[in-house]
Image (cartoon, rainbow, N blue to C red; front, top):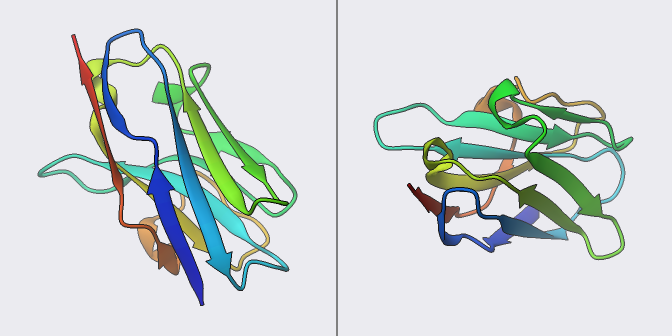
Length: 125
């Protein structure tokens, strides 16, 4: 079992920055993919960024050049650095993980077995 706890959400004006964190505990060794998803009311959960066991990262086009996903394997923590935020980045952000070697931002939510509770990000214009 794996437990994920997100933090770092909040309200910011357009152009600002936030850093989300996701602390993982439990069985996190071996092959382990992690990703960030976001969801707004009435819309499906969308993959934003992913990082696989080897550290390869992928991003949805709308955040490329603005968001950076990274992980600290010592602290078992996943990060999402979000710069140049736009109002359309507003949503509930979820951390996800699964014991797969490879993962991609286009993986649908059902590819991930473990989820955090979410952290709200609100960007005002």
